[in-house]
Image (cartoon, rainbow, N blue to C red):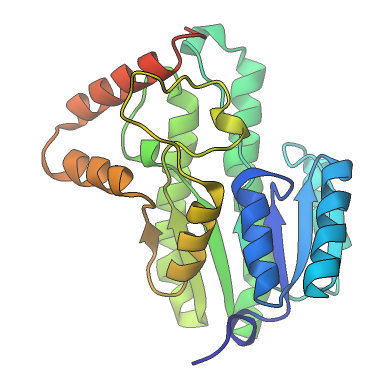
Length: 265
């Protein structure tokens, strides 16, 4: 059996690396001995994380402070990784706008599309091309349990996560012959900055730990194309696929988000 490093090479890249699931991906990958390119907007957080990783794992860390909603930010990533063989790409960065659709400015909707769709598309194209030349690599895409149906109050966000899901499944089939593993991860509520606005009291939902989500993903990479962390999320997927109609799925998810977003709505 090849080690993680033997399979994917010496360098990885994680977007949204400064906190939440992204930070946990970074720590788990560092434990496998890979060098890591950390990408986020917060330089202070990245510097603190770099110091911790270098001290604990004795690996090389490169920091890129970039806003991935902008073309300039994406070009900066491409430019500053020239010469690095990125063998594992984790498209983790994402944003969510929660409210009635018409109450969210269109500028915010477009920023969500830029970060959740355009950024992973362009990064996957750029680094995926190099992986195909080397005939090895791994790509992780973060989707969500809300990707399987329309969801009121996070309509645009859910749609972007549907794109991540379908895009990942498509390129997984294309990249298989190049020995590139592609995995899409569909967690539900998780203890990240995105979940700070939610109110879970009075609901059966308990947010997943970011470490659990990242750990499950890395375990499934190369073995499956889709992973759904958490029992409840797996149940929701199964129920939505085999029992509920799409209309019922949308209605039930809408009721959930109306409950957890009650302070905003």
